[in-house]
Amino acid sequence: MNTKNQTNPIVVIKIGGSLLGSEDTTLQDLVKLQKSGMSPIVVHGGGPVISDWMKKQGTKPNFVRGLRVTDQESLDIVSAVLAGLVNKQLVSSLQALGGKVIGISGVDGQILQSEVLDPALGQVGRITNVNTDLLVSCLKDGYMPIIAPLGTEIDQENNATGRILNINGDTAAGEIACSMKSESIIFLTDVEGILDEEKKLIDHIDRDGINKLIESEIVAGGMIPKVEACIRALDGVDFAKIMDGRNSHALLSLNSTDRIGTRIR
Image 1: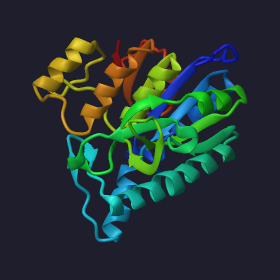
Image 2: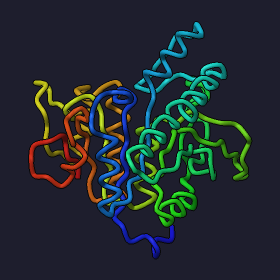
Image 3: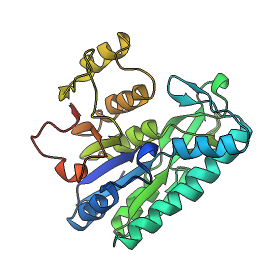
Image 4: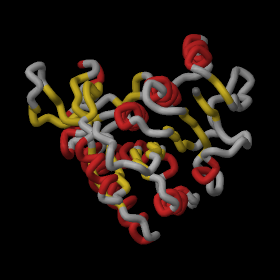
């Protein structure tokens, strides 16, 4: 990645689907960060909205280790909801707040190049490469990319097959942060952060500590992709943080010493 023209500090922010449509300050905070001279890259979820639409179509959502099992019918819904409804609602809302934003998916510009993760999960992708060209161009032109986590399948000859794959949003954020060498990666969710066996907030933790929590099943379900994405991102970022996006102006406290969320280094 050529970052010679990228002088503003990059921060990758994953917005959990459970926060979409909630009355928090996340979108206002994103615009403030952009106007303060930072370069946010946003990866959004949409799980609850997808599940609602699947139920409307008579399809039952199914998850394995926090990952959505995705057949072709499910993928059609996932693609329409993530890249269409959710992405464009976010873009429209951020523009109304004064943000300079562009809505894309990981398919655009072949950002998220992927292969099938596990046939048992259906059309769920494992990211094999992040093509940062489009992201670098967006940031250079002053845009905040808002990314729907869909990938394009690449075959063994490194050619696109034309097939779209569903990518876990947390995983996508971690890979993008690592590839872009961002200053930090922030996961905004609807819990305080990483909790210990007594359900108390852990304010600081390292890779080894996270692995022990996974092994002991203290971290489970949808939190697993988040902490695994944090570990992956640490290969390229200064720090990762999982924090409660429901807190007012949570994003503006990124470098605060207050006990807000869990900081991973």
